[in-house]
Image (cartoon, rainbow, N blue to C red; front, side, top):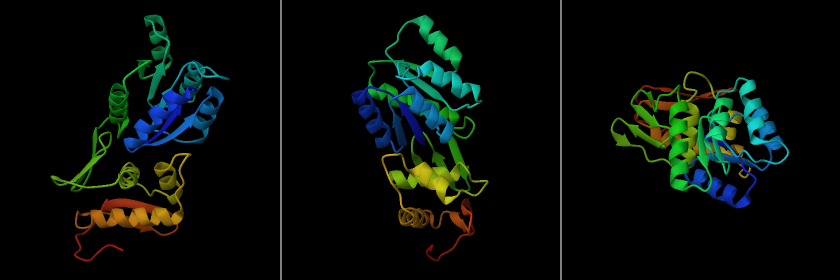
Length: 229
């Protein structure tokens, strides 16, 4: 999953980014409301973690603009602003959850998992394709009942393909899903990740098919005893 964090406190931002990346997510971080608004207009995210007290543009206005564009992406507000009236106001603006600083990272991580679980695949906590089953928020996958051992990058790649299993996913979409602004993924790096994922899916009845000139498609495939390309 790709997450945008809008937080102007460097120490809090560093802790949240480290926690989310350890969980296998790609994270983009901005420290002002204007930059958050611009990022939300220019990129697709699975979750927004939003501080209200942002410079240049208040977090409440970022949220209002996001919802006015019809975006239904889940939003977790993390703020020092406490009090019932403020919580009600922000929830009425369109926030999905509200967490008051200071908070335990374990609680933050649980709330992130809950929001992503709700949003994944129209509220379904799992995706299935043939014998392959994915728990997106939990970053787990199985073939039948056997766990599929994947690196964080391999799972992110499989997740990006599985969420678009009915349509082709371009190389640009895969690179965007796998990387945040602080990381780079070359074409060769993507080829290596796809090759490794294909090998791990080999024999499962599900594979990654190359659509020449367009991208890749995750689909059920006939069983084969030969190694994947």
